[in-house]
Length: 587
Image (cartoon, rainbow, N blue to C red; front, side, top):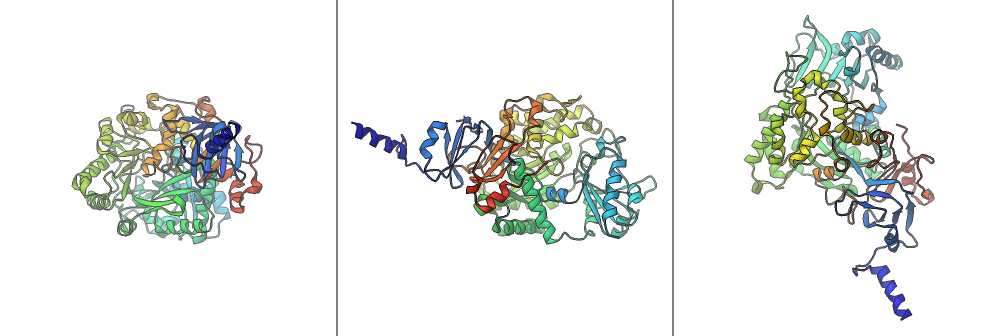
């Protein structure tokens, strides 16, 4: 009997109670406070990983059967682990260049803005371009756009071009205007505006398509700097806990850089790249077809990005009624139906996903109308993919009558919670209280039956996941303030906010069977945090930081010793893994 008992124990250890052979794990996590985002098994304390996949999720006692002599065990000491979080709207290159050039975030007045610009100009060579990004005048006193004449005071000779934080407005100085040949007689292109003073002279502000008049004169980015920007962005992202970014806009040159860096083993972050449309990049994707799951499911290119309008802050978002604080304008659309609709229809026939930037209520209604026309013109039996999962990026100001249309048409509103806690300081002035009923309405969308993938729109916003999670559940600014018209009922419970950063972005990228939850068979992507964001007070969420990032079963980042109670033996990590694990970011 004793011999039979031993044999039975051996069989159960190797095959388990179901009779399936157990694969010994390469890596085991124990003693974790694990939120799986899987409704069938929402909580666990241990995970086993084989290769790049999860082979077990459950208790500490059960995970032992996956442990062999070569298995590495990491004790989480009660730390909170989530499915590897995803930023569903993240401009990777922009994040990198923000860190590499003049970063104007956090400037609170025109004087400090000009002082920063002057310091950069003083370091530049004569005639060298000075570029930067991140200013936002809505928090200045007074909240006025800077002008060419302001910049001329500190940069009389060097051409200067500085993007507003939202990326839809740019201020330039007189030297830059001269190089571009922009005068009072220069017509504004469709979908753009050359702002002018009362005498009709350009004041230095260029909105949306008008920025292209200037951009073509800026010296091109060197291949070295372009590659460095990606690496800087990736390093920052993994240190914050992001395991995938969905990167809207760009071209095949970006993809070539990713391929080189993946080939060289220099980046591990998953990238869901979306190409700019309409134009040559779109036609190439439609002709050549998508790239899906390259480099171990790290690189996918299967979508196109359009723009319906501009931004609320720059008053270029297209509204159904005039701006409350500028009744002479309602913003403007940035694309024509005749340029958009044929591409949408071809994308349906060829299985290419489409997503469109839309901020204002007119912009959102316009793109819903265009999507509806395309979906009717190309019925499911004529599509390569019956469920195209088209997206509207931002969906910030939506007429309440249009919210149910997203569900009816199968359109995904991809939204960024941090926009609300910043914009709502000035949105009442732009829109009036009444129009805020359809503004940043995550909960209304969820209740209507659609998912809401969450992102940050970095570098428009900081690009920090804890800010996004906090904004979604608190709907207050980072000081805990909530004002009139902020609609606290639009906040989400924490379980749904977690899905905004995990399950829902995976679905929006056709990857729900690969990632988004912690469950057997899925990619072993994890984000480990310093605190339990599902339970701690709201304001404590903002103090929470990433202590470990795991992508495909590989530890690609770990916080410096002393910042978290997690231990692992780094002597056993390969050299490249050790380099990433030690690349802490202090932001």
